Length: 78
Image (cartoon, rainbow, N blue to C red; front, side, top):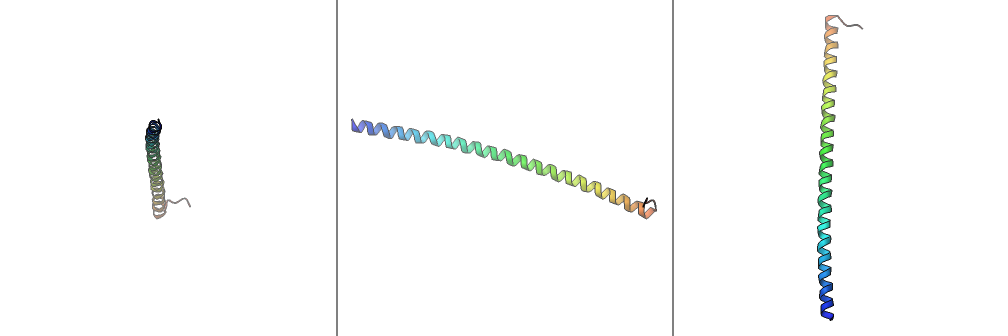
C-alpha cells in the first residue's frame, strides 16, 4: 500500500508541475504579445511625432524664406 500511495503522489506531483509549466508558458506568451503590441504603438506614436515635427519645420522654413524674399524685394511690412 505504501508503494501505491508513493507512486500516486509522485504521479500527481508530475501532473501538477507540468500543468503549472503550461500556464506559465501561456502567461509568458501573453506578456510578450502585450509588450510587442505596446512597442508597436510606441513606434507608431514616435513616427507620428517625427512626421508632425517635420511638417512644422517645413512650414517655419517656408515662412522664413517668404520673409527673406519680402525683405529683399522691399515688400516687408516691418
